[in-house]
Length: 494
Image (tube, rainbow, N blue to C red; front, side, top):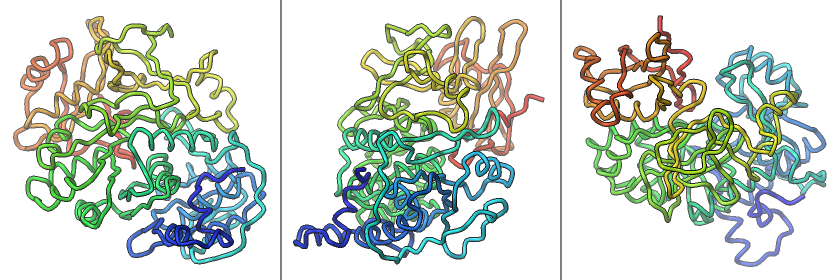
C-alpha cells in the first residue's frame, strides 16, 4: 500500500538524515490557531495512532476544526482504515443513523471533547497530537479500498454513506495540482468545516499530499484571512457566504484588499458564487476568484485553471482524467454545446466513489449502464468547454411556458439589483405556464423592498422575458446549511 502523503515518509524516524530531509521534516504541516505540527511531528502522531486502530474496517472521527481531526484522518488513511467524519452539529437522530449504518469500531476525538449520545456509546480513542511511535505494519489496502465514508446531506431521505476510495482522493488532488499549479511551496488558509469534502479532502489532505502547509482559522473571519495572507499564505479556500462577507467588507477595509491582492489563488466552491461578488472582489483587489465544481460522490469534476480564463459564473473545464457530458431528459447526450442548452451533468473518471454503503439499489440508480454518474446538476456548456451550473434538477430546473430554465442564472440577475441582498429562485405549479418562477428576496433595505414589477423588469432586461419572476416573497434571511448552500426545500409557498 502506498501512502497518500509522500511528505510524511520524510518525517518518519529512520529516513535518510541529510540536510534536504531535515528541512522537509521541519516544515510546518498543520496550524490551527496557535497550535501547529511539523511534518515530523505529524508523522509521529499519525503513526502512533495508526498502530492503535490498524485492522479495523472503519473508525468514526469527531470532526471538529482542530489538529486532532486532521491527525485522526491521516492516521486512518495511513493505516488503511476508512474514516467516517461526523458533523459535530448533527442531531442525535442523524448521528444515530450514521453510526448504525457505518458501524465504526471506535470514535476518534480530541481529549476533553464532550460527545453526545449515541456517539458517547462507542469505544473512544483520544487523539494525542504529541504522541510518537514506530511505523506500524499496515494492512494491504488497495487503491479501490475506501479512504472515507462521507454522508450526503439527506435531502431526499436518510443520509447515504458515499464510499470514497483511495484512488479517488489521489486522482482529485493530483488533478487539482495540475489545474491550480499547486505545489509544496503553497500555504493554504481556510476556515471550512472538516466533516465534508471541501474542508477535509481539499483543505487538509490537499496541502499534505503536495507537501505544503495549511493554516485553519477555526472560525472564518475577514480579519483572520487578512492576517494569514499578509503572513505568507498563498491560497484561500472559501464558500460563497465567506466571499460575500469579504466583498461587503472590502470597500471599508483597504488592508483586506491588499492582503487578498497578495494571494496566488482565491478559490470558491460548494455553491455558485454570484457574479456581482466576483466583480466587487476583482474591482477592489485586482484578483479573480476561481470556481470549481464537485460533489461528495465525485470529489472534483471541473475547475477554472490557474493558467486559464477566470470567467465569472462558470466552474471552468473538466479536470484531467474526468469525462463530462450533458444529457437531455431522456438520457440522450447533447452533442453540440452552444452556451444555452440546459442538460444534466454526467461524469466518468477515477474521481468517482465506488457506491453507497449498504445501498446497492441507490448505487445502481446513480449510474448509467455504461458507467456515467448521474449528478442531478443542470448546466450549460460553452463551445470552448466551459461549464456553467444553473441548478439542481430536483429543485432548480423550472419548466415554464415550454422553456427549461435554470434558477441559478435568475438568482445572479436578481443579485445585480441594488435593492437585493440575497436571492433564491424556485418554481411553483401554474395552470397556464406549467410552473411559474418565484423569487425569495432578502432586501437591502427591509423598509423599502423592491416590487415584483421592478424585479421582473430587471430580470427580463438582462436575460429574457420568460425568465422573469412572477411572484416575490420578502424574507429576513434565507435558510442555509453548514456549507452555505441555500436549503430550498425549507422555502414554503404557503
